[in-house]
Length: 518
Image (tube, rainbow, N blue to C red; front, top):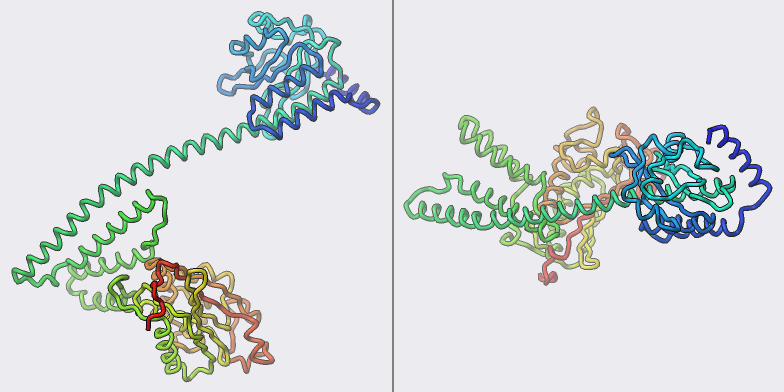
């Protein structure tokens, strides 16, 4: 049928649809097709339901779905049903070239085709009849169009009283459902393939990591024991072993043990709270300083001074052997220190008596972390401001909170907070003043240190901050005293206008069982 004939038939379709209603039987066909689409993810089952409904409602001998094969550049029957099973029995051997048949014409033009007399239509692909024995008398063929491309065609064959323009509308509507189902099936199949590939890779990963973990464990134990034997024998022979890099060797053995633990954790599908990039970088830096000092003795004094500074800022500690004390004693020590060091500041620093606890972390580490948070709070809180420090146990975890009612942190600067050596204020406003002074500058290592310790020892750090609305950007300045602030009529105005809360969260495994010991 020519393109003009199709246009005329579609015009007739519009006329018919405005004058008559679609029959209840055909409405039921659309309903059943939509219901099948919503009730199954099995594409072949869905297509079988739709094709069977088409065959029954339109009273035709056959119906089916031809899909385009991109690799072979032709069409194949995905589903086909006919009363005498000529087509269905030969579907595996029937392939139609892309540029042949009514399907090729519909696929290329994107328009439906009504063939009233197949014996005279030049588009009919005769090898289908030869291979199947099915003789085509008339047909209706509509394109299957997805959002991005054409997928194939939907066929109805040999209707007893010939196809109508109403049938064109019905089949075009059905084609939309079929195309949607095909598209969804394609996505589903891609996801299923990706899932199977991920499962395969996961099995390979587990096997490799399990092997790596096993291969690391035994040599590490032997190397560790051998080095300790060498050190002991050297001591027995009178050598000064402290002049040899045994400490460095042991530290790197511990790194390899940590790696082995991390590999084992991955294999067992559990998280490892061991060191991450920042804390490892500090360990590498210590080794680099030692090696450089040995290679260049002239720099040893300067490098030793650098190393000493690193040890002061980032002290190493043993989680088991280091001294641990109740948190209440740490709070008491910090409260005394704050009173001595901030006497020149007019601040209300309140230490709320903490819930009893002993943390499985060396006390000097906890002291260093809290001192850094409190100093940060004091330096960002104007005179007559308030800071609250408290500790409480809740749902098996322990929370230490340092809350200030100071200037707060702009949203643009929050992502850089723990990066270290990063001033929140503009460079031209940055200054190095006496520690604990308002807006006192510094190296920026306090928060970096806290982050490193959190990674090393397995606790979490959370920050909530609201920038004072009177100084929204980092270039705006707070006068440093609430009593002279033009935005505040009374002290409480400042309390509700900005501030920062740091919260340390210690999981149950970092809490001593008897946390009430004196």
